[in-house]
Image (cartoon, rainbow, N blue to C red; front, side, top):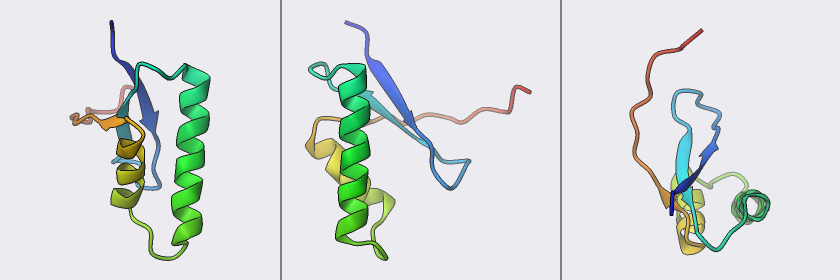
Length: 75
């Protein structure tokens, strides 16, 4: 089965997060789950949460970060 990916934009435009969607999630379910997890992390530590906190929450639910090389702009 092909891996399904989700790109998570960030405030730092040059460093979005790319994750593999777990096999047991549909696309809409994955979108909602990621949105909820990010909100939970932000609510728990509104002034001190980090990118790593969000990645930890995602990984606990089966999402896996993918390393990638950001290429040049196409337009």
